[in-house]
Length: 346
Image 1 (cartoon, one colour):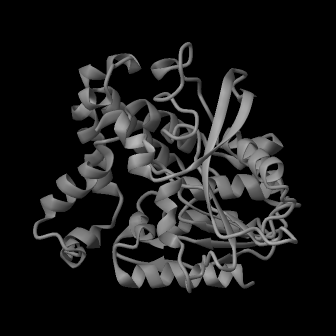
Image 2: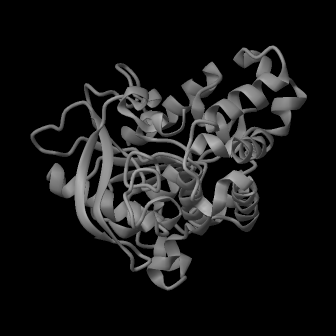
């Protein structure tokens, strides 16, 4: 599928916010940068019902639409829900859609802060919003949520982080190093200057296998939970579902996202002082780790919560681990919706 994966025909309709010449944390300037996004619901007259939902690694704004629905916590009849695409998603400015001289392997390094600064412009310039009812995110979306709450405390009334920490743990960074190296290990990767992402199928398959191993829990395989999802054999999950998820994607896009994930650290705003960074947060702050998560174990969230005034931590147990947010089991859908309702009604 290659580049076709990032088309409106596959991803569904979305909007673009033109950022113009956009200077990144690296010092590089992207000419004609853009931020893709989509919205659900209507902004009320007071402009105080907006909920921002950034997305995770390997996703797009379309990935978060499964959380939205009439009668659910993220109800578009009640909230104006903004789903922004991060840089490198393939819809916002990315290696796969940026012309020379920043195409493919030449695309500059980007950061979580770069994403959030662009999202802030979208929220304030495009919609005239000065206060967000909530910011909600999972995994890399949770890292963006931390960045929002620290960078713009006056704008974030509520925040919910699912399975993410304020700084990426070292063990997590090692995993990112491995799956990034496996992507690059395919000779067809050609240092990022391949012609067609489909040519890098070996690297994408190797990359997917690491997620098969780490994205759920030991119990998911030991207790054959994959059968409850509808797979007749474990290979249907590891080879079919996981490879099927990653195979259409662009490797350079994934690598730029992975580097952001690896380097995420809100204390960069305060010279490396995490207590000072998290001390800026004034939002009603909720943290929901997933039990058995091998990326962001529940215990890794506890130090962050201890440094945020009034923060609440509640573990959501599921054999699906980090991928609980995908809602592969009905009880996971209910648990996520209950958590979101708790936050949004607080």
